[in-house]
Structure formats: C-alpha cells, structure tokens
Image 1 (cartoon, helix red, strand yellow):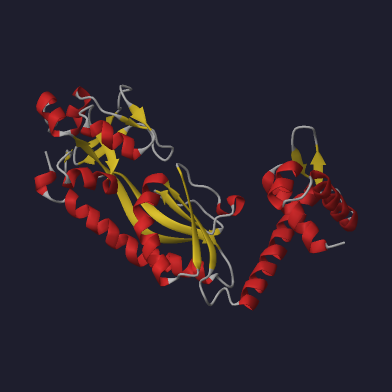
Image 2 (image 1 turned 30 degrees about the horizontal axis):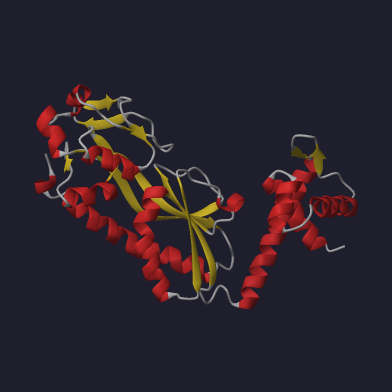
Length: 310
C-alpha cells in the first residue's frame, strides 16, 4: 500500500469531517477514500475512526496517530519544498485570507507585490471572520484581534486599526452635533453587525467609560453599505478609519468626537510555522510589514485634519 497517500487521505477525512467531503476534495470516490482509511487501520492494527451515520469520531489511538501524521506530512512538504527551492524563489499559488474591508484596502498592495514577484499567483479570500489557516488551507491569514490567544502559528504584527463615529452634514444640520459621548443617546446610531465586536460603542476618557447602544433603525454587516447609509443622512455610524477617509475627503461625511478612537485592534499576519518557510509567504509578510503601516498613515491624515471634523 502507499502509506503516505493513505495518511494524506486520513488527515483530509478528519479535516473535512466526512468521507464524502474528503473524496470531493481529493477527486476520488467515497469508496476509494473509505478503502484507503481501512487499509491504513489494517496497517497500524488499530481503529482510528469511529463511524456513525451522522459523524466521524477519532478514537484515542486515532488522535495520537493524527498528531504524528500531521508532523510527518509537514516534514515531507518541507523536504519537497526545500528540494524544489521554494524557500528561495517566490513562485506558485499564495492563498491569503482577510476580513472584508481590510482585504479591499490591501488589494493595491497585492498589485504592487505582484509586480515584484510575477511568478506568484495570488488567491485572496474575504469574509467576516478569522479562520484557522490549516483547516481551510490558507498560507497567510490577516487577522484582527485585541490580543492573540496562544496559537500554534507564527504571528507577525503588521499594524493597528480603530473606528471613528461619522455622520453627514445633512444629518448634523437636522439633529445637531453631539458634544460628548452621552449626547449620542439622543441620536440615531446605526448598528454595524461584526462578529469581532459587541454592539456597544465604548468611549474611554478621564471621567471613565461611556457606553452607547445603537438602535435597530438600520443595521448591516458591510462597512461600505454603512458608509452609503451615513451619506444618505440615516444617522451616525461607527466606521473603520480606513473606510471613513474616502467620504471625508469627498466632503460627504464628518468625523464626530475627534478625541476618541474606538475598537482599537492589532492586525496580524498568521501562518504555520515551518523550518523552511516558503519564499512567497516570507516575502508577502515582509512586504505587508513594510507597506501596510504606510498605507494606514495615508488614511489617517484625513482623520487628523480638523476640516473633516464636526
């Protein structure tokens, strides 16, 4: 039997959660996948998976075998990459995941990186969550977090972000300009649905902590839609600073309560630890560390301009 191939199939079955999903990912039949796992169990003389009609469960032996199996496959991938020189010259497919708004922001950086390394094919996936790089096959995940929990991945800090309250001139002419966070309770505050944050807007100053809970007159989960709602005068929104700068420069939105920065978070590039780091991962992370702070600084210039404040 091809022990290494059977091991790859076993790991994919565990990661996929079913024989059928693994078969689809590997372009095999479900029967072939089932037979390869059965052959592997016969080879090691132990049951690795308990099969039920609804799900698969690793046995105790299966959990131990999976851990060592992943290590073996990783070593094999590293050895292959080393032999091919992948750790020396950036080339091949680079799979990157980012949160929606931040991913749109970095697209020009991707274009510039592509000019430097034309042999790299970029695959960018956007969503409203922070996925596990190994489970979903990403080479690099651009993650947003206040603090990173203990992780098995390498985490490189590449910048900081925050959000600011904004509103249109039309809305402010009709409803007045809030002079402090407590005044927001008398305004129509729009709700941004984001799994990274609670619904509350939390302001901190020398008087302590002030909390504002947006109403339900309008809510959405995409920052650009929130920008359009704000421009239309629907109310006050809390926007990531890099999303707010364009409508501010165009005169469509004004920054409110300019002394405050809400939802401050760090931005990290996460990738699996490898002895021989793939050159495309290394160069992309190094490029982000050098260029993303510059891009953030360009956007912050609009926020710091009193002409854009209410």
